[in-house]
Image 1 (cartoon, helix red, strand yellow):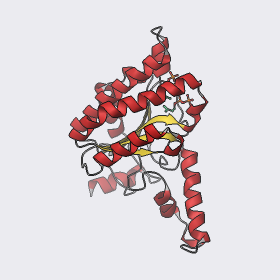
Image 2 (cartoon, helix red, strand yellow):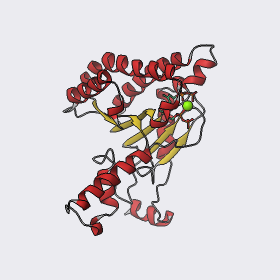
Image 3 (spheres, helix red, strand yellow):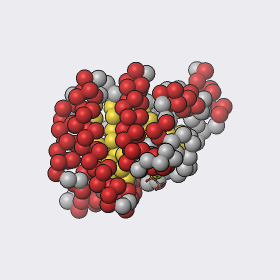
Length: 248
Ligand code: IPE
Ligand code: IPE
Ligand code: MG
């Protein structure tokens, strides 16, 4: 993105869908009921994002750290990913949504990897909303895999050390063909990034809400977008400089 850009609507929204477990617990339900409710929320939010013409959303579905949860919860989450993908992909395709997964998918079962690959292939030419799903993703992992790729290219004399700059690193990270997220939303009340986009969120506007993910809705997404539109993105410059470019 242009450093002095004054976009008022975010082109790319990154979301940490947090609070499913607490939502379920407060209702005396098992945690997985919260995850199921969370899938329904995501479905509605995607419909809304299509309606309001958002360019891209990237949702954090499963972090690399989430493997440390009880095996029973991880297993249920994996089943839920497969069933949600199988039931939703046709509708997403009908709505011209292009689906992309980021993260190390090799750790998933063959069945889940197949569902992921099939959904990407089916929707690859779609030109509407870009829906990126971060699964077995973490920001540090992303940076490490980029370093590995760059090191190999240096080793094989494809590039020189002097060629390594910010643009090159950005190019080796997940979503290299994308604008960095403009707006980050985390539901569930925690005010942390939890190893989501680290490099890519250098200038992302951070929005935190107490609302638990299953209770987050279209109206609340609109509120977050309104909040974003009131930010002045300075990228290191002064307010006066930004106002001057806006008025010229
Ligand atoms: C987010 O909700 C979903 C995943 C991490 C898969 P949580 O399961 O973290 O819900 P809380 O934070 O325990 O309420
Ligand atoms: C972040 O939520 C990851 C996802 C929503 C997939 P967590 O619930 O795992 O984050 P922490 O552990 O509270 O930081
Ligand atoms: Mg959580």
